[in-house]
Image 1 (cartoon, rainbow, N blue to C red):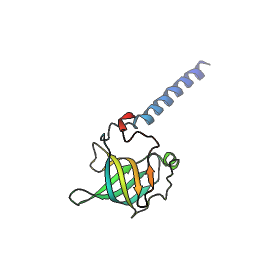
Image 2 (spheres, rainbow, N blue to C red):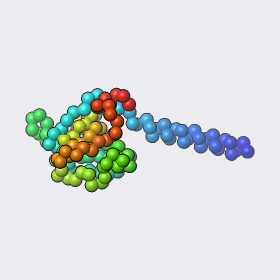
Image 3 (cartoon, helix red, strand yellow):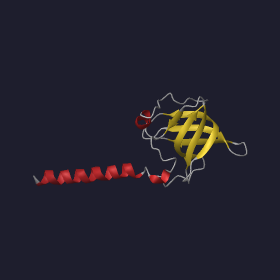
Image 4 (cartoon, rainbow, N blue to C red):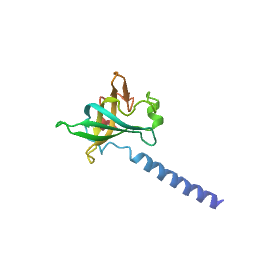
Length: 136
């Protein structure tokens, strides 16, 4: 009886530890506090995957140089509920990207939303915080 109880306690501790690590990386501290807008960007690759989908795209900087960006969104299952699917973005698509840049990587960040050439919007979240990433 004591052995079963001890094993249950150990299993519970392990489970709580794993869950804690899983939620810990979802903070906003690694992103700049204000989203930037990159107009006329071109999708190079859309990676429909877990735990985060990735949008790789090229955008020009203020000097006209092409910068290769990586934008992270939620999991495939989470953004599917917001209207995304694995065919939402294709290489060559022209998009406008709203992104919170990383404080550490020059051309990477967390997506806020993407506006497609036809005006449709793909949001990373259904929250209505007007881009105040620090609320979470």
